[in-house]
Length: 462
View 1 (tube, one colour):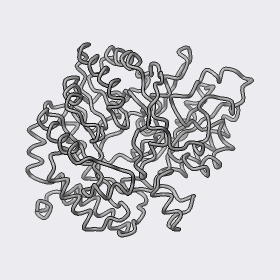
View 2 (cartoon, rainbow, N blue to C red; view 1 turned 180 degrees about the vertical axis):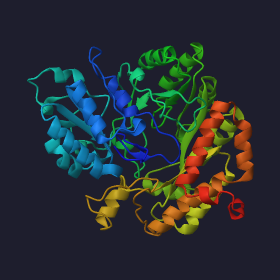
View 3 (tube, helix red, strand yellow; view 1 turned 60 degrees about the horizontal axis):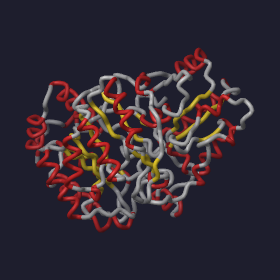
View 4 (cartoon, helix red, strand yellow; view 1 turned 180 degrees about the horizontal axis):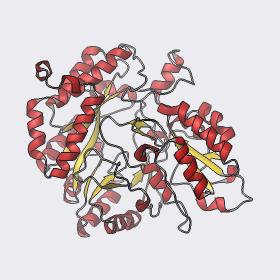
C-alpha cells in the first residue's frame, strides 16, 4: 500500500512511475512458476487495484493462506514495515516471506527478522512445495537466505529451469508498459541477473542465470495461447548468452507468434545479425543505459560503453525501425551542473526516440549509498529515495538536492517539448490504441515533471 504513488516493488530496485505506466509485477510472476500446480494462487496488487490495508487483510482472512509473500520497497520502507507488522500480528501461524531492494543491507534483514519466516533472495531458487512439510524449519527452506551473503558473482552465466509462470493470475487493466503498441501485455524472462557490474546498480550481485531455450519457448507458447500480442522481455540486459538468445529468436520467427516486444539492451552487446533477428521476431523498442555524455567518466563506476558499438546500434536500429529509449542519470558523483546540461543536450542530438531521466539515488547495496554513509551524508536507517525524487533527493558532491530535481525536470522539458520531436512522435504512431497510450504517458510525464501548468509558455519551446 503506497497511497496514490505508482510504486513498483522489485527484488533489485523499487521505483516510482515517471509517467502513466505501471509495470506488471514481474518478480511475483517469476515466483508463481515455483508454486506447485495443485496450489491456489491469490495475487493482490494494492497499487494496481487501489486496495487499502483493510482490503488486503480481509482478502487474506477470507482465503486462509498457507504462505504469504510481501514485496517491500526501500522508497516506502516505513509504511511497508508497518504493514508487515500488522500482517504478522494477525497471521502469526502462517509462513510470511518478504523480498525487496532494502534487503541488500543486513540492517534491514535484522529489522524484519521478528516478523518473517525468511527473506527471498532469488525467485528462481525458491521451492514453495517445501512449505507443505509442517516439520520443516524456515531456515532449511530453499532460496531463503540473507542478502548479506551475496557477493559479486562470476560473469559466466549458468543455465536454470524456471517452469511456467501463471500469467493468467497477473491480469489488470492498470498494468501499462510505456513503449507498448498494445495496452494488454505480459512479461517474459529469458535470463536473470546481469553480467555487468555498474557500481551505482546492484543487479550484478544476483547470480547470472539463463533459461534453456525449450523452457522459454514453452512459456511463449502459453502466452500466445492466452492471446497476448505485446511482450516485455524483462531481462536486465537482453541478449546473453548469444547462442541461446539467437535460438529463441529463431523459434519466435519460425512459430510465427507475431509478438510485438521490447527489452533492455546493453550497447556493448550490439551485433548486426542478432539485431536483425530481433527485428524480424517483433522487437519494436530497446531501452539502453546511456547514463552520461561523458563515457570516460562512467568507467569510474565500472560502466564501459564502446563508442563504435553505441553509435552502430543507434544507426542500425534507426534503419530497421526499432525505437530506442535512452536512460540517463542526473547527479553522478564528479559531474557538475554544466556536465549535466551537456548530457541533456546530447540526448537531444543523438537518434533516440524516448529518454528517461533519473536522479542518482542511494540504492541499497550500491556504491552511491555506501559512499554517502561513509561520508556521513546518510546513516543506515535513511531510506525513501528513488530516481524520480518524489520524496527525497540526495545531494551529490557538486549539486544540491534542489539543483538535481530542477535539472531532472528541465531535461524532460528540453527533450520532449521540441516541436520536431512532437511531430515525429505523431507520424510514427500506428493506431489509436498506441496514440492513447502515448498521450496518457505524455500527460503524466509532464505532470510529474511539473510542466503541465506551463506547457504552452513560449519559453519552453526555445
